[in-house]
Length: 477
Image (cartoon, rainbow, N blue to C red; front, side, top):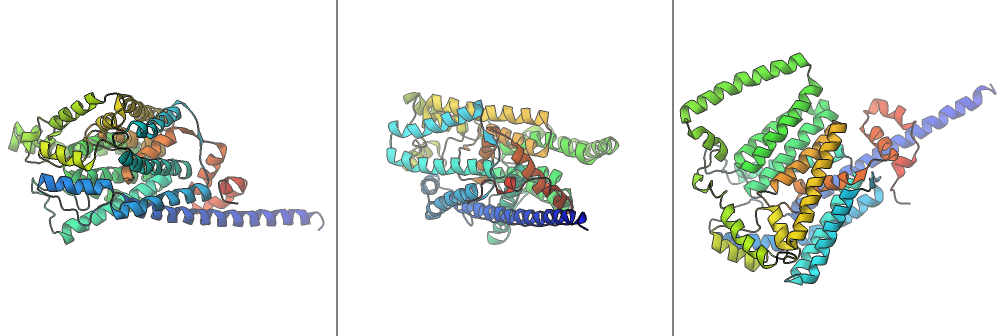
């Protein structure tokens, strides 16, 4: 008996350690869920969305509304400090992941530093100062999300937040306003924000749903229908840039899903089935519309074909804004200092439609931070794209794929829309991916990832293999 006693004590201690680690893992999981809910609520009120969103027909009135929203509503002024506090709590209580290093981090720090320094030459230091505070909070939250959440957890946050926005918008369009008209060429699905920004939210919803399938295949019963609904609503927004990017990225993502889920024979049958459906549809559409089929596809059913040649009124706007860049080419007007309420109303009146921004991120950066700031932003974003696809080539996991497609979407979307670092969750997740690309994984992170992502029956065995420290890293003492 004296020989067996130490063995019995050791097993008891191991059992106690397993129970303690399981309890700690459960507590950590719920902590992250509550932080995710808090982030979702703060992001909703920080944008802010409108319930319901009603587009003003008068350009001058629409510009005034956009100016007021851009300057910041009461909900935005309250939610931004709360968002900062939630970020502080996450950084304090949640385990930290990765180590910051590399040339991309240097580029990101140079861009942030140039933006902060721009207050010294800003045309209106008070406006630039206020917007730099928001910029600093956004950059901090993006860093916190990248440092404390895994890519799978970012997928969950992105999916539920954007799907929730889509459901609210669908309720507004069908019940609140009763304006859902998918076959009307003048209709665009909006609900709680403009059609183009609604499209961005739906894009991220689709990306997160498809990448979650690899982690949680049993969720396919509702992830797949959710992705189909989001794609349908995306088409109804008639946002051409977002839809085109989704088509390009879907080709990569669906190819990966097919390789992960189906055998080669099944993939061949799926290709044949898709061709059997799409080819007759294309022939039927071309036969009915003739030479107008390509134009109809490009316009996504919209009637404003007269604006196609000038990129939906963007070309005249960019021409006017380039004159402003030429006046202060190197320094700009200070971070976000160009779009004052007076300029928004003046440029909107000149263009004949509401213009709250340049509808081009790179041009907006040149207006705010000059050519040097725009080059820093360009180098930061596209370097992150290259790093993300490089990581995916080395390890073709769903996590690496999500980072690559989000960053590619951010870089391409910026050619036709202004998607700066702001509290808008879909783009903020993409900027968090830039922070992820500045990080390298550590041994502790791998241990935490394996324990947290393992199904419940196997987790007890794994937790015994790791020390208590990885789960406690970053916790308050």
